[in-house]
Image 1 (tube, rainbow, N blue to C red):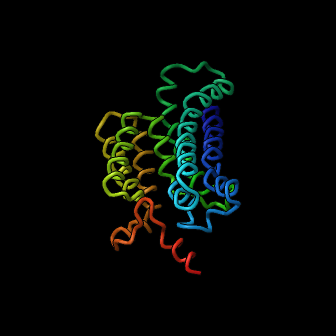
Image 2 (cartoon, rainbow, N blue to C red):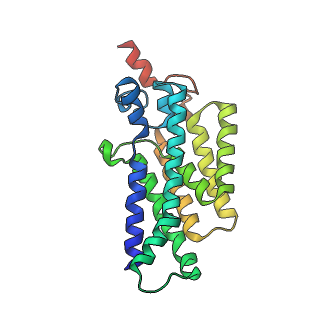
Image 3 (cartoon, rainbow, N blue to C red):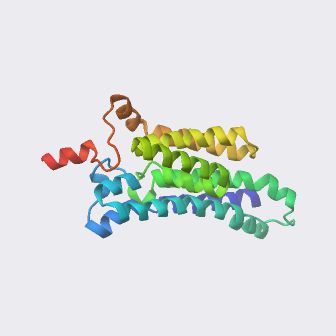
Length: 228
């Protein structure tokens, strides 16, 4: 009972953290627009870059990464404390070792889900790549830094954000399976990585068609709006 209660509370908190619509708020506060009606319609940092500019995009990127970090901190710190309040028996190191990885897994799922299916935006949102990076960094920093490095290298060479995000997700999956990690962590990274890739399915189609815009270019939707 204590485990279920603490995990459920952690899940809700992580979901609400992920649901914080940073890109949408940036559009409303800076230009009074609904960013979901511009560019790629996403609330992520890439669409913020194309629609609002460099510094708003950087701010949204950092905020989205921190959402993922915060969700894992809640799972590792607050949930065990909450468990202790509801449990009639003391929390042992063995309990923590067995239980916390599953709480981290649930919180990671929740924050990714919240980012792309925000309760404040009628269950729309971004593609969860930046928030997923925050989860990785807080959960396993070597995997997170490696994924971030692949993202940066691919972006520097190809200048295509979606391609960088997809390859970074694949890198995270390979590394979490190749090195020693708790099974719930592997489950989260594999499921989360696949989910991020699936969220980029329209981008993948444009990559094969060679129509995916590069960094600094406007998306096809923005161009269409400019001609109206």
